[in-house]
Image 1: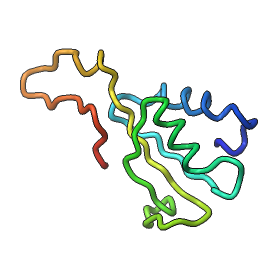
Image 2 (image 1 turned 45 degrees about the horizontal axis):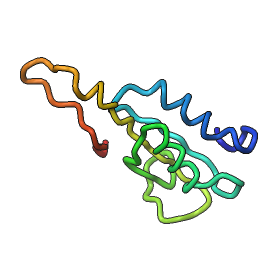
Image 3 (image 1 turned 90 degrees about the vertical axis):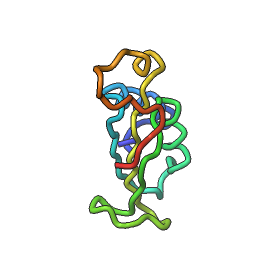
Length: 102
């Protein structure tokens, strides 16, 4: 998806996609790395949007990523401080402030 948007608009695209992910949920994106937007850009935009890298694969069927021209990145939405401070029912697991691999 970031490859088909005008250059410079990717941060806003990632921010809007991340806004639809529930805290602790995943944003999964796979795209070719041989264009003007790479993994460093994607990771930086995801971090700015409150997401943390959980996993990265070479294919949609979860083959290990060891470089190459295509990657599937899974970023987990981190809760805001406000969301993390909301009282939770007794016995409920706490909302994590760091990512958990899925």
